[in-house]
Image (cartoon, rainbow, N blue to C red; front, top):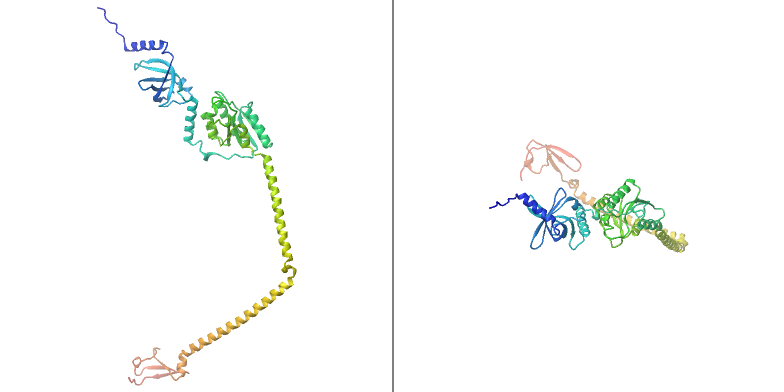
Length: 402
């Protein structure tokens, strides 16, 4: 009996890998499913599973292919992938090496746009607190755009019509293609280094979402946010919105509208000034007429027509008031004198001297205390008797009690 041939595990895995990779269908296959267990490795490789209601397939997307994705895959996202089926020999599990990926239903660029918009909004790059006011009367405007496009011609034309004294500095930049984002970033930085412009306009004419994609680049958004000079975003048509529009200090619907927002119409300023001058002349004329009428009425009034009569009338009034004041003063003085006399009389009536004048006296002992009782003195002691016209010193010889 022949002995069976025995294979190693690694040889079996290698054989299966060769079979799978050489299979016509499995060597380039499109698969639809939902992403789960997504992980982005530090190396740049993407690891995830693709599942439907019944099965799960492990997938890997290597760094080179992952870097070309315009969006970041997420758990729960429905996608369609293209790649080849192989075996990861170390674990013996088959997997799909993904080379292409696109969202199933929603466009990849739309997803990338929403992801970046949500990220930058959470960092505060869209907050109105950071928006700066645009100087509507600038001396210079820097325009970062294609020097050959219609956008720059529109901006120069409109700005010149509104105020011919405003100078335009065109900073050439690519506005489409793989190098466009970096070119726009460098244009914004150059405008800041020159320190010449009051405002920067960044933009281009209309196009598809792919044409405008450079203005949805995170590097462009951060360059606009970091600019020391206020930035107006003017990308595409009125219905086009880009990340640059949300970050900029002001969004213009078109490049022409950006010029209108950046430069005040000097002709309109002149018209407003002329209107104000007409109003001032009108109101000044009315004020002068009213003042003249008041002066005329004043000159025709009796006070101006017969000034001496007015003075005479006032003089008589003053005399009458002086006479009245004199009378009332005299009456007040007499009343005060009478009152004082009455008070003096009352005080005199209460005076001890008046009592002494009626034959009374008061006595003090040697200590100067008033004697009100025989107990206040001693026999042989000294006393002092005060009368109305003098004082008597005496000695007590005897005390008689009543």
